[in-house]
Length: 359
Image (cartoon, rainbow, N blue to C red):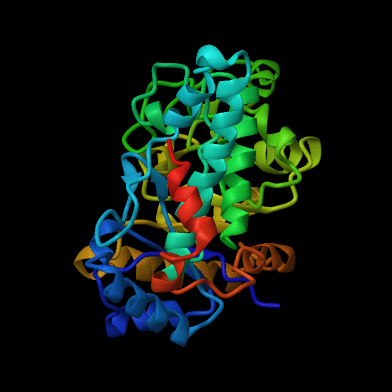
């Protein structure tokens, strides 16, 4: 069985001949959409239909969490709250008594997942990289209000409810950023964050939601963070984190995506600046099933072609070998039911009810 581990992007709101050539390559397994790929719903539906006409198995993804990370915000898309709004609702018992806020928050989290997934699927999108499972330690600007709560028990409970909503919409989920990005202040987009806590401390706190969600997590995205008391490599390039801890110790069975290989936290490894091909090979060898390269298609996309060609050479040279299990995990993220078209969705009672339950 072929393995298609590359998740790439496209430069604009329509496919070019170059985009089509890249997406047809057998090493490409999907693409991630950004705000630059959006004009309106009709355009998005047409774009995804064109992508699927090239290859029905391509996984169409987006970062669409709500709050400040929401790529599509106009032409009918619901402005979803930041995930922290659910955690705040959890704490608001009011006069109704202890636990009332938690119950309302769980219901609202399912509503968020349902609305998020249903609207994306109505436009043809297969997967959103959500929910964020990082804890809100208060010092991370890049995580901040993207986190559900400080308490890992609350995070796990709300995330499970949100995943339920996604499932109702026919969409899988992706928990991120394993084992936790919320403790460090540095932003891995522009820096190499270092978390100096022990493995025991991390597993007891930031990583605690992962084993609690092991039966419902469909995919995981590791953090471009170094935890030197566990491994000198960032989690997404660490076989200890991905194979020994996440899979063997915590029992995770789903797919593993690398975070964006163009981020600063992914470019430096073992004291040197890596090429995208070297970074991809190391991430895949460490245990990732798929690797993302984002925002490199703009301006001609030379880096995208270099990655595709480079991984093909690495395979020919025996530096990387396709993984049948990894390909099966990628394919398992594709929706299994047809979505409701947008106009039907707007009148669908469960969707209308979910809108009313948003925080």
